[in-house]
Image (cartoon, rainbow, N blue to C red; front, side, top):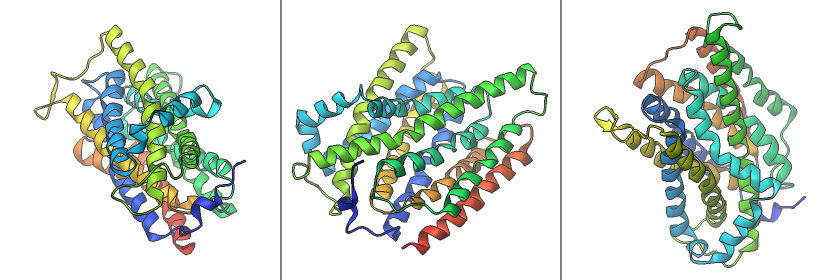
Length: 345
C-alpha cells in the first residue's frame, strides 16, 4: 500500500481551511437535486447526464488551466490516465461519472427528496474506501466516529418508508423499490470517487515538479488539479455513451421545454456548473487535511437539499414525518462528527 504521509507533512489535521472548503462544497453541491427536480419532467435522464456532466467537466478544465496548465499542454498525463481505465481502480473511477444519470432515473420513480437522502449514503463507503487506499495519509477513525457515520444511515430506512403508505407488493411499491435500487446505484457510483482520488494522487506523484501552480499558492492546489484531470478524462466515456443512447432512443433533451421561461436544458447546465464548483471545493477539503472526519459536514448536504426542494419545488412524499425524522438523524450525526473534527485541529 502506498505511503502518502509526505503529502500532508505541512497540513493541519482538520483545520479551518479544510472545513471552509467543505462548507462551500456542501452548499454548492446541495443544489444538484434541485436541478433534477425542475428538469425531470422535460429532460430524459440520459440527456441530463450529458448536459450536467459536460458543464461540470468544463469547470474542471477551467480550474486545471488556471492552476496546472501543463496537464493540458502535455500528452503524457492524458496517456497515463487512459491506460488506467482498464484497471480495477480505473473502471470504478469511470463508473463514478454515472451517478447523476442513475439519480435522475430514480427521480422518475421516487420523489426527488427521497432519492436525495437515499443517495446520501455514498459517504460512508467513500470514507471506508479512502481510508483503506491512503495508508498513513489520514489518521484512523475512532470507534465512536464509525458508529456516528453508520447511525446516519438509519434515516435511510425512514425516508424509504416515507415514499409510500401502501403494502410492499403493490405496483406503486414495486416502482418505489426500483427507484430505491437506482438511488443505491447512484450512491455506490459516487462512493467510487475515492478511486479518482487514488489515481489523481498517483498522477501528482508522477508529475511532481512538472506540474506548476498558477494563481493559488497552497501546495495542495496542483494535487487537486491532478485529481480533477483524472475526473475530467473519466467523465468522457459516460457522457459519450449517454449521448449516443439518448440520440438512438429519441430521448427528450429539454431544449424547447421551458421551465420558468427558460429551457429545461439550461437548468441542467447551470446545475452542472454549480456542482462542478462544489466538486472542486470537495477535493480541496479532502486533500488539505489529515482526518477524514472533515467529510462529516457532507451529512448536511441532503437536509440542505431537502430545504431547497421544499421551498422551491415542494415535497410529494406519502409520509413527510418519516422523511423529516430520517433527515434529522442525519443532522444529529453530522453535528457530533463535526464537533469531533474541530477537536482534532
